[in-house]
Length: 447
Image (tube, rainbow, N blue to C red; front, side, top):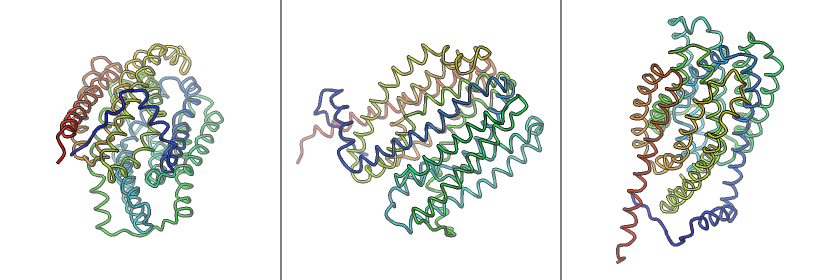
C-alpha cells in the first residue's frame, strides 16, 4: 500500500491553521463541519447530561447500589456489542459509498436491521440462561432485564445510517430531547436508595423512545423502504462486519470488562468507587473527539477511494493536532483530579481519585492514537485491525484479572495504561515505517 507525504510547509502551526481554514472552503467540508457540530451535541446528550445526574445519583444510591447499577450496565454492555456486531463501522462505510442509490440503501438498511433483531433475541436468551444458572445474577434479575432495554433501544437507533449519509441533525435533536427527559425524570423518581431500579428503567425508555423516532425519520425523510433481504445480502453484511465485530469483542475484554471483573472479584461498594472513575474517564476520553471521529470516518472512507494520498495526509494532520491538545488537557485533569472527583461524587468517594488519575494517563494514549487506529479501517485493513485488538484484548483480560486480584480496583486502571500504550507504540511504528517508505518513493527520479 502506497502513500505520499508533502513537506512543502515547514511551519507546523501554519500547516494546522491552513487546514482548519480549508474546512470552510468547500461545500463538502461544510457538511463535515455541520456533522461534527451535530455529533458534538449528541455527545453532550450522551455524556454531559449524565454528569448532571451523577453527583445526585452517587449521593442518593450510595456506593453499594450505584456499584450494582454500574455492574449491570457493564454486563449488558456485552449484549450491546453483540447486537452492534461491527455495523457501527462497517455499515457507515457501505452507506457512504452507496448514498446516491436508494434501492441499495434500502437493501443495506433492511439487512443490518434484520441481523440486529435476531442478535437481540439471541442476547435475551443468553441473559435468561445466565440469570437462571448463577445466583449473583438471579438475586437481582429484575435489574438486568430493565437494563436490557438499552439493547432494544440501541438496535432501533440507526446512528450508523445517519453517519453514513452524513446527516446527523435529526437524531441529534431526538437524542438530546430523550436525554433531557431522562435527566429530569431521575430527579423526580429517584428519591431514596431503594429507587435504584428507576435508573435502568428510565435509561432504557430513553433509548427506546429515541430509537422509535429515529426509525420514523429514516422511513419518512429518506424514503427508505424495508424489505426482507436475501440470504446473500445477509451473509454479505455479516462478512463485512465480522473482523470489526471480533475486534470490538476483543476491545471489550479490556474496556467494559474492567467494571465487570471488579464487580465479580470484589463487592458492589468497591465497584461503585471504580465505576465513578470510569464514568469520568469516558466523558473526557470521548467528548469531543468521538464526535469528530464519527463525522470524519465516512468522509475519509470516501476520500480514500478517490485519493489515497489526500486521505493519509488528513489523518496525519488530524492526529498531530489531537495529540497536542490532549497532552495538555490530560495534564490539567491529573492536576485537578481530586477537585473533580470531590465536586462530582463527594467526600465518600475520595478513594476514586487515584484510579481516576491513572485512567487519565490511558486517555492520553487512546486519543493520541485514535485517528491512526481508525485509518486501519479506512484503508480497508480490517484483518490487521482485528488481529491487533484480539491480541491486546487477550493480554488486557489476563492483566485485568491478575492486577485486580492483587491490587483491587487500582489494578484494573493500571492494566488499561499498559494495553493502550502498547497499541499506541505499535501504530506509531507502523505509521513511521510507511512514512519513510513513501518518502523514499517520492525521492526516486520520475520517468
